[in-house]
Image (cartoon, rainbow, N blue to C red; front, side):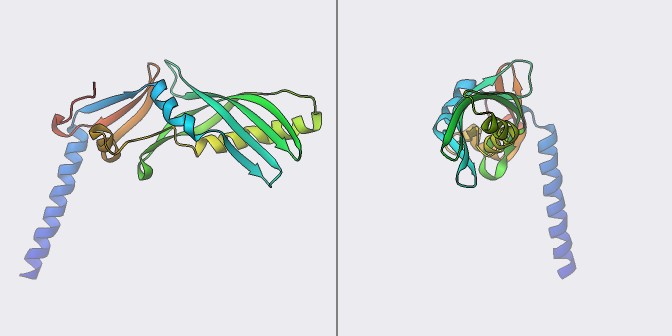
Amino acid sequence: MFKRILLGLVLLLLLLAVARWAIMIFSPDLTVDLTQAQLQAQLDPKFPKQECLLKTNCLELREPKLELRAGSDRIAMRAQFVATLGKRSMPGRVVLSGKPRYEASNAAFYLDAVEVSEFEMSGNAPDFDQVVKVRGPKLMAAIVQNVPLYRLKSDSRTESLAKLALRGVAVVDGKLRVRLVNPLGLFEPPA
């Protein structure tokens, strides 16, 4: 008797696993496009962001501006920064980019594989310049990788679904395209 119940439970779990697999594979996609303005609106309150090596050597990123370029799979960001070494501070600007990554545990999108393409500082302290130019880009990439670009809202039906059924995320036609599993075509794309 116990073996039959156990066998029945195992078969039920197997059936549920196969059903979930079938839904994920054969369900149509639902796409949600997030515009540059939507991403920027959520990013702005998170800056300025500062990272320090020791208490006297700091790098602060300010005023980030996102760029979603058509034909690119990366999200670009232009930002101002202030590098501080002891009592000396020097402003500058940086352009970096990264690939969008979704982290399900906190329902947020981040940048991965961050690359710094432009890095300029103003001022005339050659010793300070060299320290920041060597360490600055890596520190900026570390800052940006840990700041969520966009967090899904739990009150939106589509965004709640995304937490459970995200298929992929990419930059398409100047927008961040989120592809979701749409089980049995139950959800309509947002207007």
